[in-house]
Image (cartoon, rainbow, N blue to C red):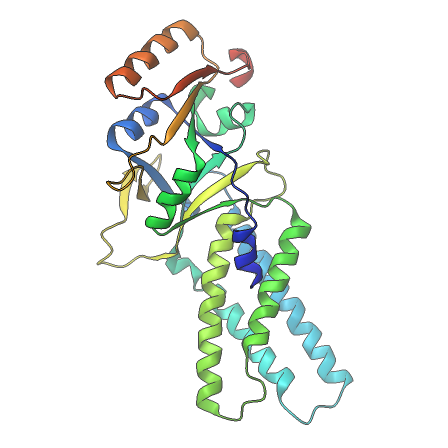
Amino acid sequence: MSIFDKILSDSILPPVLYHYTSPKCFAKIVESGYLYAANIRYIKNDISFSYTIEMVREEIKRQIQSLKRLLKKEAHTDDVPGKKIRLLNGLIKRLASLEQFHIFIISFSQDSDLSSSWQDYCPGGIGLSIGFDTERLAYLAKRQGFKLVGCSHNKAEQEKIVNALVSESIEKIKTDSNNASEWLLTLNTTVDEFALKTIQLTAMFKHPSCSEKSEWRLFSMPVPILPTNSSIRFRGGESMLVPYLEFMLADKKNATPLIKKIIVGPTPDKKLSHNSLELFMSVNALKSCTIHYSQLPYSESI
């Protein structure tokens, strides 16, 4: 099993994951039946994409220098180190082209009531934390070509994963092959696989300085921006159009309620917020949901 597959298989799903959002977006989510997956490079203050790409680039450079030192130190009758260096140079070149692919994410947390999350995801710190049934979420993710995985904030762990990913790519190269066509085909296939896994890592890695340490992400497979790609939609951002994908919250085969609980965030009027939420739930037939309240005082969230 590859290191990438191991990361996905080792993710033990908690029973409930929480999505923080504003009251306006909550209403839109329930009424439309969709969550909105944002393009990772358009998320304000999120450096996951550039952070991960740079980490991968540095690891490739490190392995190239290691092979070059080996070439100087030892005599080789074959071209094994040279072929490995050629592969690594190909990986670096491919990193520069990853911007033509886009990955879309939806953020969740294992914690239902975090001050940092209210501030980061809810304008003015006022919002709702939607508790989703994680098993159903994972089921819907699989049907729609998304993956659900816990994020890594540990740099040592991230570097270990990147090292393994680059090393696995090197191992796939048939260094004993004298067939030029076979060698080139393997090289191109390996570079493509590496690029696909690298761009997915950008959704799984978070900078160690991020305050939210229990984050999970639902992410799409890398999407090329093509004229024929009608699945990508756009909304108006603060200064530009922002691309996104829709993630369907139900299907005809399994109508089990997905939203299990709702946490009302710090608010200046708890009673009125409760009354409006109860009325909204009644109108939208959210009978299986329970309402809870943030334990944080309103003054701490703004």
